[in-house]
Length: 178
Image 1 (cartoon, helix red, strand yellow):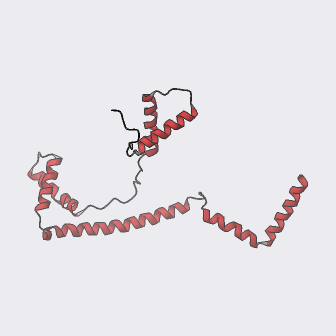
Image 2: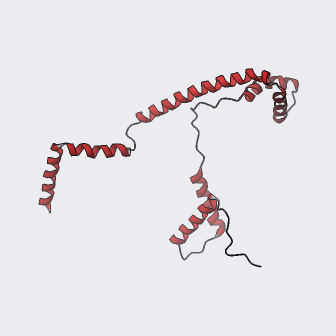
Image 3: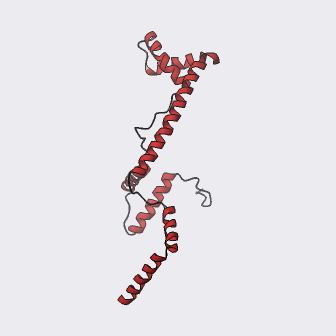
C-alpha cells in the first residue's frame, strides 16, 4: 500500500516554505548542478536566522512595571531567604507562590495598589519616551521622503505660470539639440 497522491500534505511551516523557495532559486541559478543536502540545509538555516533575527529592545526604553505578585515577591523575598538560608531560587519562588495564594483579597490590596501606581508611572514614562523618540526622529535630518509630500509638489507647479514658461523654453532648447 503506497501513499495516496491525492492526500493533502498538511500545513507547511514558514521555515519549510522558506527552504522550498531557496531550493527553487538555487535550481533556477544552477540547473545542472546537484545539491548536497547537508550543506544546502546549513546555508538555508544560516540565511533563515539572519533574516528572522530578534528585534532588539532599546536599552533606554522604560521597563514594564511589575504585577502585584512581583511587588509582593520583592518585599517578602528577603524574609524567606532569612528563614531558609540554603534554599534555591526555585524553592524560594515556590514558597512565595504559596504565600501569595494563601493571602486573602483584602491582604492583596496594598500590593495591587502599589502595582497600579507603578503601572501609571510606566504609562507616563512610555508616553514621554515615545514623544522624545518622535522628536529625535524629526531632528535626524533629511531622511527618506514620504509619498504625500511628493504628490503635493507637482500640483503647486501647475499653478505657477513662471515655472511653466521656463519649462517651455527648456523644451525649445531640447528641440534644437535634436
